[in-house]
Length: 508
Image (cartoon, rainbow, N blue to C red; front, side, top):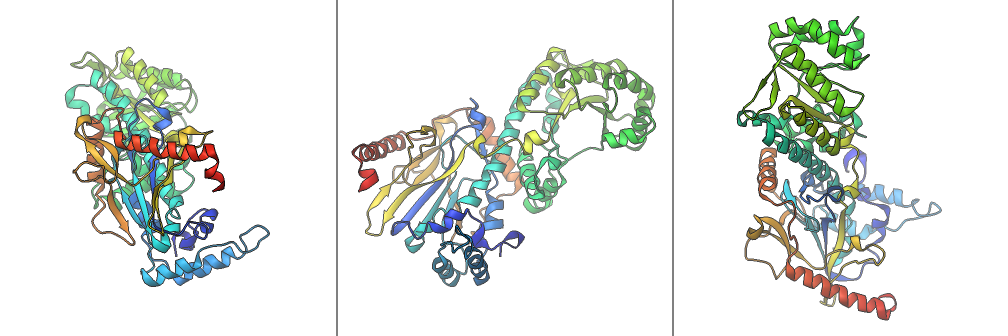
């Protein structure tokens, strides 16, 4: 049985169960996964592939049992229109339960987690043989769910790129280490379930260390990283704490007494943000200075840019600032965090305004909640899995592709693939046809082969290192498909288009 007490056979879309019976008899079938375009069609086309380990271990590398099939059959008996029997390949399921120890009979190759990729580069390749060829895309439903952690990881990394640019202009070299904490995950409550928070929050932690999503912080530390910590946070108030006190001054003083020797945050807009900055900060300044820690001011309403500037200027008036070696002001023992409605676009507006006002980027941090873990979907990077090659039972091989006349953006690649680092593009991953690839090892590695494969998953630290290395040296855009593969795609397209034109694609 699978997670949540679901029969493993039901971890798929309904129509998948009907495909094996109508799939052509074949010796082999191959499908692949790709992102069809960059994040929201950004000019910076780099994307992060992440999350497959969780999918494989949780939903795929589990042995099916007769109970899975029996419970699936009981369900399918009333699932067709009119509550009649829905077709499903019971005989194939029972066959691999008996002959393959219950493991689903496909081979999955994939790029390493944390790999930086470009549109159309195959990130996975699935192969099924002989009588199981018709099951080649049965796992598509769960495999495609890697779109979510991949998209969060990509969004977080693009945010890092924006903040890094501001850091390079305004932060001294000995303070660059603070960049890792500049974007904080506030998204736990924005998620639909704990599992989503865990996966999305882990994806964010590939780039940043700041997180209030405890599910992800614990999962990464103890399930993926051998107990080594990755995520950090600080004590902070919410509006309930602020309004529970008789005054905001009392609330801030209580925070100073409890946590004032370290870093702590106070939300300041429960009633009137401007007045709180003007009246509360001076009232607590002496005790705050005695404690010596860092007070983080958090606005949570109003104009996002102006609220940050108000906080910076108020903190400078009360606590002072110093000018760093790059000519920007750094607050003394204070900073501002903006976590209200932050997106990569508003983040950029805030950074531009902060630097224009003469403050260093290290004076401001950001929190993202729904914008990080919720306001994305599969279309954000258009992830898809498509059949690309079939060898029929008589031994005839055929590379296949789709090219919908009314949706050319969904055109797929034909063939079986290999992915290699291109030294001419600083190691950018480039897709080749199998048999036409360089002699270097393929970046697609076997992660599941009719059962679990040992030693294929890296620690979270290693995944982070891979992402840091590749993102820093790979260009924002690359020629990601080899010339041979592009020519082959055109060749297959031309043949199929001719069959469309003469009608044989529809009636032969």
